[in-house]
Length: 354
Image 1 (spheres, rainbow, N blue to C red):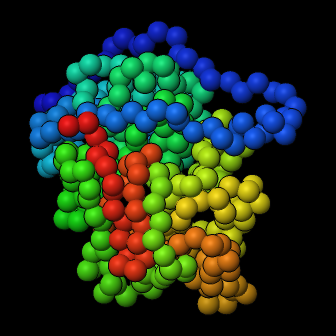
Image 2 (spheres, one colour):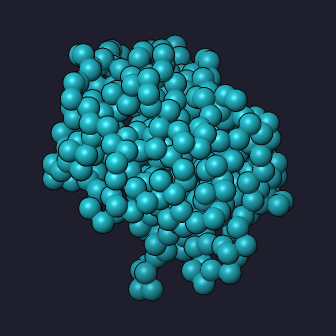
């Protein structure tokens, strides 16, 4: 690997974002829940040969998966830049200290030679660095940032504080199927004003019932896209990085959570008063989330129907995103249309500047 860039100097002091502790009046609470970027910023589109910075803002990446990341992204025609010592760092279940991981995010955004930033994996830890990011600098240097799972916290934080469109899509260690590559290319590297994302035929032939799509509430809805991993979205409620869901298309996915746990997270979003204000709800493929044979439990589908079926908005399960091989890329903050009739999601504008 000869396309490496080793950073030796850290940025200056890291900007900290704090939440002032004070009793919330009804007026202040209403203002907080209205929080949403007033201005949406689109990053420049990526091109073949673009310089991509690799970061590990969550958990450490095993060496074999790191080698696969290099193969995946070089295979898409990108030049890769990273500080190998930083990106392969380990601190227990974290990819290095909070300071190191935040510094790498800030550094990649500040570097004028970097065109886009790719997270190498999820895991846990990106929420821990949100108050150490230099949001003013990031806003001045918009560029593609992509990842999913635990990276949801990073996407939410940066979008909320800057208005920069961030991308819920494959991390470096993901499986880069033809469907995944097609969609990430069309979203990050295309100038299309409208782009329709449909189910891959392979999903319909999967033996695992988790892949089978299910229309919970039929209909068509439009709105700006926000969401990500359900565990992370629910954990950000009541923080400065919570996003106003009113009139939005909410996309959610998760892995390895039994129905009662997913029920608990959805219930949190409902009793917050936020989820029912959405224009529509898009659920991905929830792998390994079914109840066990001997569990006294609702099934995954029964749980979704119970928690979301009463909402007077379109709701669909099983669109092709999440911890799966065929994973389409979703731009945070872009206007889109959900159509449960043909099980599609259509982006109604460019996600990147041409």
